[in-house]
Image (cartoon, rainbow, N blue to C red):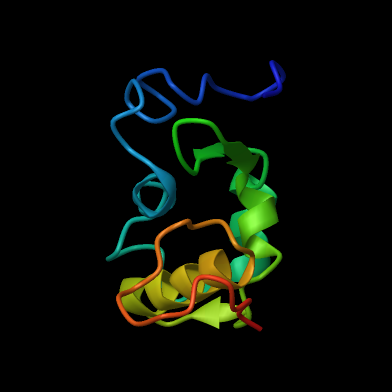
Length: 108
């Protein structure tokens, strides 16, 4: 893990002492009423270096997750959640696989 993060990924500003992970940290960066529609690239420009704790061992900059986000704009918070969830699966950031899903299969 890098010591050059803009905030401590396990501190109160990062992941609230390791109590918040991945999608929750990303969602906390937006205001559902004021920030939508939202441009993906502008969001990454502002928060791309922010540390996102994936699990107890792994922290990545937000921009790594957003490399897999397809739409350039999100109309709603739900749209953003769906796109980021798909990106986290496509980028193999999540170790969780829904029941019945093949954990060996890589998502495109």
